[in-house]
Image (cartoon, one colour):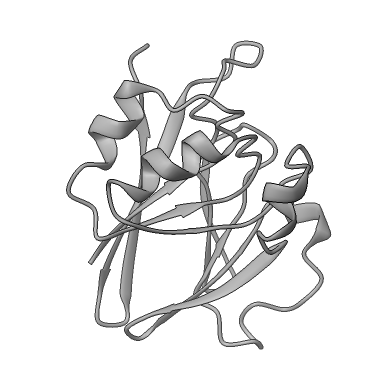
Length: 152
């Protein structure tokens, strides 16, 4: 199973992001969506789950959860926008993957056998940070993560 992971679009769904996500089985958006057009666009590509970021406000955003626990086969994923608000031990909670956004800094890191993925920002450029998204490949209990820098 291939899962596209995107964050911090800030109401901009770049054509490069759409192209990079084509063919995924599922999309996860880690917050700071900033508008329903992004959700509609991503939903046309694959099934979508999203969490609310600190910039997601208004009636449309109130229906989006602040965090999500998701299961893909044998792999449990916890997703939230701001990792600094993460207040549980993911390994003790049975999570193999933690997905977050907020920093706009793409990152793949393993800590205490838990994979942490921040896909970076696929929205407007912030400072000199890259425009990026992530891909998770899940096979059984195995998870592989990669970052894709988008040419813009």
